[in-house]
Image (cartoon, rainbow, N blue to C red; front, side):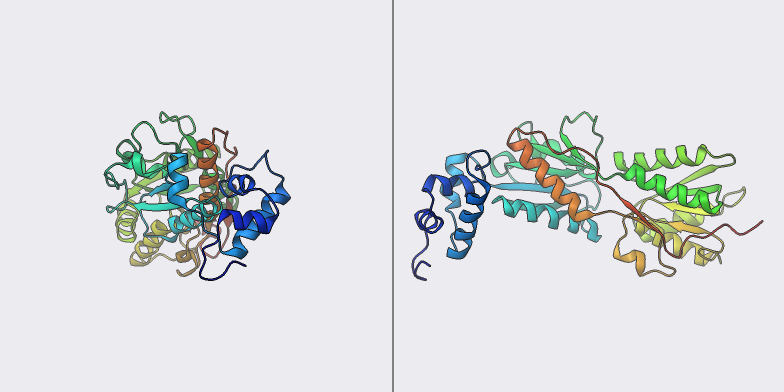
Length: 338
């Protein structure tokens, strides 16, 4: 172990690991694959950790032309979902010597303009939610590597994409409710222009429409509890047969729907089954607990960061959507007989 008063150097790490300084540079610069054995790389990392070695990032970044910093652009931090995305992205970034700057929109949906005076000089890449796409021209210019989360793989941005299998999540919700016997659906849709919400509407309509007697009405609301309450009350006041199942694009919308149903004297799930999507902590705080689709936010962030690292290295990111899981709780039941 180096003396406490002396900052360990790459030479100290090389000596402790029994390798050359060049090997230390390759491993700690994450350039070792195909050039250094995995066991050797692990030995170098362990020696660096035990010595408390900290590379001179300023000098290394000057040599590499990198800041080792990426930007994660999200629409808001008003739920824990995007905090989980950040946690996953930051974990992978740290493993590769990168830092992550989190940039939420002050307005909550659709980001503010440019978080840096000169973003291209301050960043190595960008990970952005599709709900935050409006900021990308200002932030990215035409130069920075970009990965989009929850975004159309065939979109015009031409960026790599990482997606949760939202379409399958909606199919699971619809299949569950149809299996219980529901045929009249109300879709409480997020009033946000985003590909991920278009997918939810399309899949729900297709799945329910394929069943004889199935119908879907749509009400839209911003993602807030009070807006969801007002939209649900207005939708249920409309003429015609009352829906028996309420499918919400988000758990916060479902919480607002609960408030509306109570005000109207309707019980969940006796008079109306309700589902959400996200499986936030809120889903088990409301009564009855909410049937919803669980999304692995941290894995989402991890995959997003790994995809960005691949893009920056000129590699093809891992393909395939991230699986999601329907969690059935007390908010769904067979419709009451007419």
